[in-house]
Image (cartoon, rainbow, N blue to C red; front, side):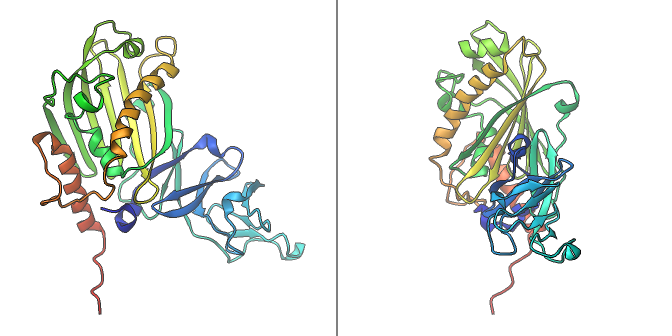
Length: 337
């Protein structure tokens, strides 16, 4: 499955940028191969439009804010959040006002400290993470480009068999490579995976878990939201809850913007955010190193292409569910004449 060749992927929400990045001006972002400008209007609401001025095609991301609008940096044409040209400075004062000229605009929302964009009417709403309203603190961790497909990252996030090998220098136990058993509850927009995984507890993790034992058990509830979003809630024996939200926003076929933040039910005094990020950085770098070596064209029909083992069940289910969604929602190609 190539992201830019799968029209259905335009009908999902993706986090494209932390809101704080937009405080001083518009920023560019490529989503599914399409160049966008992301900006905030005068009320602090997000906007997403094609990154091309309809006058002489200058990139609007090189523009600036003025009176709650986005002004093109070339000739100063001013745009509203819906893409309409609201002012052309070169016109006489008595001819100023909204025009019929515009650039394409897209749905944009702010949630969890990030701007989310959908290029077409989304099939499913933005997910509601229960931790947001339960007094958990949110720690923003990563916003970086990976050279891998979003589906590869999602499969890896639900793969109990890779811990002992990919994470052998952090928490994995090579002496016990057998993947933990799991249960799966299917949902319309994805699934929930429930599992318990015994892991090593290295010194850096002891610090952020406030646990002195050399081993511990992760009670995990991993929620996959199609196509490339997961929330993994990890409960530890001492009552700590560490929920990791990871999204692989598709830039194009071969690259993804990885957005990750965590929810925790402890305090900064109990575990510094910098230490939490430092441990997750180690684990994430281990995943990244191996995932960037994989093929980004992930086959949804695996017949004779990629072999499987029983622990691949979540990934196989992802592929099957995405194939069903494409069949149900993506218009069939017109027959060639």
